[in-house]
Image (cartoon, rainbow, N blue to C red; front, top):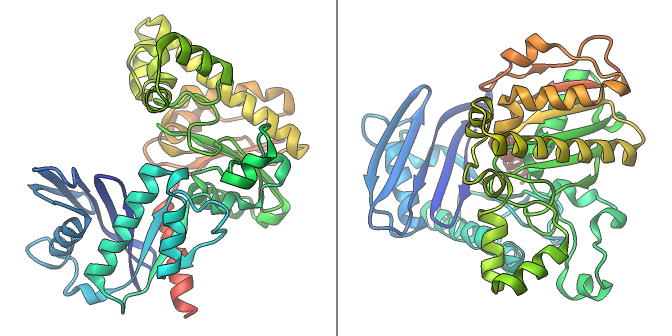
Length: 401
C-alpha cells in the first residue's frame, strides 16, 4: 500500500510518499511560495534532489505540480496516480472535537473549520490542502486526518485548565491542548520498544526540541501534561517564540509600546525567544557557534533555554513521581551535544549516568541510548518520524473500512 502524507501550510505543501510494505519512503519534497508569482518545487528521491521554479496559484495547482513530478518525466516514481491507496493529512489543531485520527468527511472538514480561531494560520491552510487533495484525487481515494494535539487528549483537567474564569473555558474552549503530539507519540512508542516494555508500564518524558519545542510527560501510556498550551506559544523559549511569560509583562509592554493584539502576537511568536534574547539569531547552530566565539548574549541565551528545559523535566518527574526514561528528539534534540550534556549532568543526583562518546556521535539522524547500563534513568536519542506515524494511522483506518 502506497500512502501520500500531506502537511499543508498557508503558502506551502510538504509531501511524502511512503510504501507501507516495509515502510519505505519513495519520494518526498515541498511546494513553497504557493500563491506567489514564482514558487519553488522540490522533489527528493533517495539522496538525489530535483528543484524547479513554477507558479502555483493555489494548493490545487501545487497538488497538480506534485502529481506531475511523481507520475511523469524522468524522475517519475509512479506509473499512475491510482497507485496511491490513500492520503493522510497532518492537522495542527483538533481542539476537544477530535481525540483520534479519522476519515475525512464533509462533517470532519466543518469541524476543523470551526477550530480556525484556535489555530488561524494552520487550520485554514490544512482545509485548503484537504480540499485541493479531494479535487485532485476524487472521491474514490480515502483521505485521513491526523491531529497534532490528539495524543494529548488524555490530560486531566488539573493539567489542561488555566487559572482564568471558568466561563471562558465553557464559552471559548480556552484550555491547554498541546502540540507535536504525533512526534511525542512516535518517539514514546519507539522508546518503549527499545526498553522492551509496554508503554503502559513506564513513565517517560519526551523532549521535542527544534525551532518549535515542547516537552511531554507520559505515564502508563497516557499524556498527563505537556508544555505547549492553547497555542504553540506556551512552554519555554524557542527559536522565535517567547514561551511562558508573566501576563503582566505583556500588558505592561502593550501600554508602554502601544501594541495592538496583532502586533503583540507578532512579537511573541516571531521576534522573541532565542531570536529576541540573542539579538537576531534563531538557529541553534548559529547560537552554539556564536557562544563558542565568545558572544556573551548567545551564551546567556542557550543557558536560559537549557535552564527552562531542566525545569520542565524536573516538574514532570515530580508530577509522575519518578521517570523511567527521557527522550531527545527534533532538530536540536537530535543534534545538540551541549544541550544533552547539560541536561544529563543536571540529573546526575537522581542516578542518571551517561556515555559522552555516544553523545558526541549521535547526530544527523543517528539515534541511540545515551545512558549507561547502571543509570537509574534511561536516556535515548530517537529521530522523530511524524510522517510515518500519519501513514500508519491512515493505513489502519483505510484497512478497517
